[in-house]
Length: 356
Image 1 (spheres, rainbow, N blue to C red):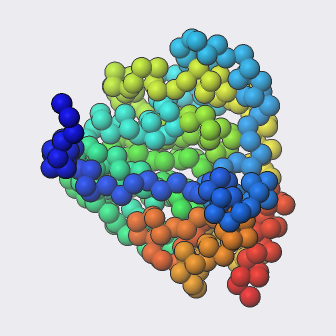
Image 2: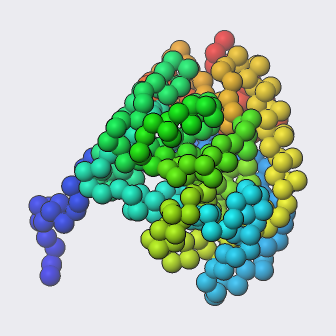
């Protein structure tokens, strides 16, 4: 058939799409280079929470051995994750980034008409998952120190909690999480994407609570953002259903499986990278006088509107994140990734100039 009317096209689409606010990624080198006439080599990218030190050399070497004509075999990756986390392989879920893991979990648990609990501001993909399942997100504004301010609603099917929280960098304590788990029938997904930069993890609680899943990623501390490789730890009753519902080969590639397994075999490299990032985070917190963070980024409140503040950095070739796209963050929040000492010094010099 030929072309159809706008009405016909609209009628083919799911109504839920009209409720979506698309995910907003951090700006990249190419975009800023074109807009401001800057060389990519002169741009400092501190807007996407990437690890500036990259992955272990072992991961790069592993990519050279990948047979691209073969489907992925994740056995070595699962063995590495088991050794790293202390969990048996049959409690480990893998996917194409943590968002891939969450996508499968949302298909397992959420039916049309269900609801999810999402404290804001936080990672916006939780909202997208909920809406695409024809479920209803119930938002809860965080308190003045970005703490959880309300209990999980009685009828919530899932609760999405991020610790350290993106974009604010604060964490949930063990006592508080236990109280949440014991007071709700909801499946609680605890996003620990940034946990290697925090003082501790709550992953051990998965072995105690049937309604807890802890998500992790190799994108941040392990420096494999470009590989899109995430995982989660879940009780056996959930893990078995996950394997039934997950896409073929869990949506990962042979390249990501090989790079992930190699990165996990070189934990000293990852820990050295984290140590350098934590040292720089402490330096920036002291220089700026901002709230302490337990992630690889800082959350700053600005006097001028955040879009204007960020624009002044972009024009200087420094990419930081305007947080207006985070529901509940308001008009005066920005997020700054911790980079190398040289990158951070460029940011600090610009910060002093802009804020003087």
